[in-house]
Amino acid sequence: MAHISDIKLIRTDTTLDLSQKAEKGMIWTMGGASYLYYNAYDHGSLTCRCGTLLIASSGGKYNPIRTFSSHQILEATNNFDWSYAIGVDRFVWYKGTIENRAVLIKYYKGEPFNFDPDNFYRDIAVSSMMSSHKNVLKLLGCCLEFPRPVLVCEYPEKGALAYIGGAGEVIKPLAWSVRLKIAKEIADAVTYLHTEFPRTIIHRDLKLTNIFLDENWTAKLSSFSLSIPIPEGELGVEDIVCGTQGFGEPHYMENMDSIKNRLMVTVIT
Image (cartoon, rainbow, N blue to C red; front, side, top):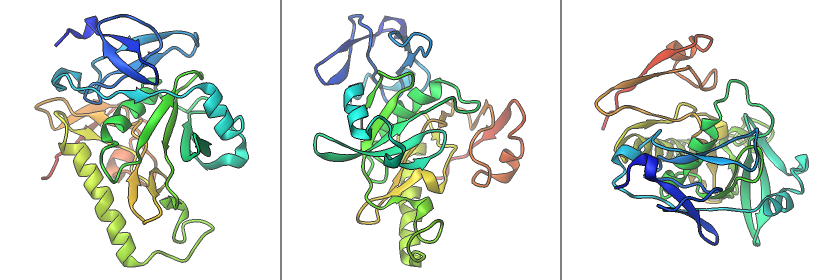
């Protein structure tokens, strides 16, 4: 396996691939671990940012990621028309159509508060390696022609769980059998995130707006921008406190205003 500093990227027709040849404008994941850093101050520049997640133990595996053009994204969202928006967080979810297929488009708009630019690319990397799980919102590709990355995902017909079953202006509360099914499916996805890869990854932002439901009420976990890997041989990692008030562990979340907090995780299998 090549040293991290030797790895460069080369563009193929509609996907991004790994090569020893150097060329700008690419993104890739290696075991879901490597990604490109996009310089928002120089929109034409992409520089390689490697080794931040799982590359040391990836075994040389990588996932090509399809790229979409800015024209496709703007056409699908009618220039990011708010009437196409179906959800807002640190980003905006838009419903659109690309190649006659309904898609969900995620755009990090504006300047998210206290948001590390690396998180944009972590979202792409982890979403890519998690997309094979049936209870994860499938990443179809991305676009790097905007100041911040745009993610293109499968379209979940029922929408976000936050707006279903009484937590918003919609239908009657969900039956307990459906609620238990959703809880089990999300637990399966989180267990996969914790145990499937060489290093445990923690989501850190589990909440109703990050869980979608398809036409069969199958739960789909999304949004891995705040996820963090646990170093090999450790049970925890030190990082800034992040997440959403009301959804995180109370003792952890009460230190939201502190600079750093110790996140301790024990994976139960």
